Image (cartoon, rainbow, N blue to C red; front, top):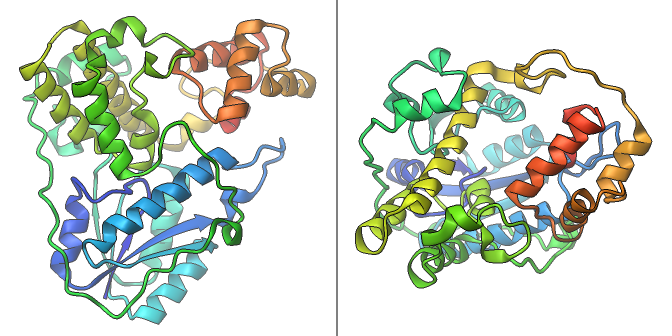
Length: 360
């Protein structure tokens, strides 16, 4: 039996790794809610808030529905990953494990745990638009300035091959295990952005081809309030319900059949930023999480009163407070809002950026 470990790839479209797993034999899917997601740090900040957990849980409900069309059961568990994996491997006689490799520290700890079982593992890289082997330089030579990175990448052919539709496997005598949200300690929330792969694909089509909002993206993207100010692709990209290659191919189709202008280019431009930070993480590793990050030493004076005021939107600065209150009440804040409140937290209040990042 083959185990497919879902992480930030909660979809069945453009799923080359799941395709490989299905070619390998009978497959079951697993998603783990680690105990650490529900814990708080020394500053009292919970690892994953109710908005995130609810969005992921509802996304998994959609994923389970999608996987049923492939006869792949999905098992959802909460707990210590090592204990859960040990249980799953022994219960279902797992011989192979498939999973995407992500650059994060906690993810790498998980992969070490997977390797410790001594089973065959198969991995792939699905998160970035351009895979490592397609880059015109080695990761160690990644330009420190984004513009230099962008200029080199934009010379590459814009060919983004998506994996074909998956072929269902033969039915197996294993049922999905989908606990209710209460059993997982998750509050079910109605989100403005509907979770799940089907909703993600519909949103992409609506944004591009029905409302044709890509025409004016560059002009509206700095808006901080209206739903259509920005693409709202971020939550879908973060959970992997939208493939970045799907977005890019649909965008190029839109440019071919409707409009190609500075705004449509700017969506591609932002996807390149996403790739750049992914590769910067690969290049620099865990040092990006140090107090100074990749920059020079700066003044920090921890002040719990200022930190709490910032978190609760009670700083007395209307723009900052409005954005933080929106985050607290909806789980979302616009890109421009995040830049404003992050700069305020680090440059004006002179607090440790990592506390703000944890709260985000």
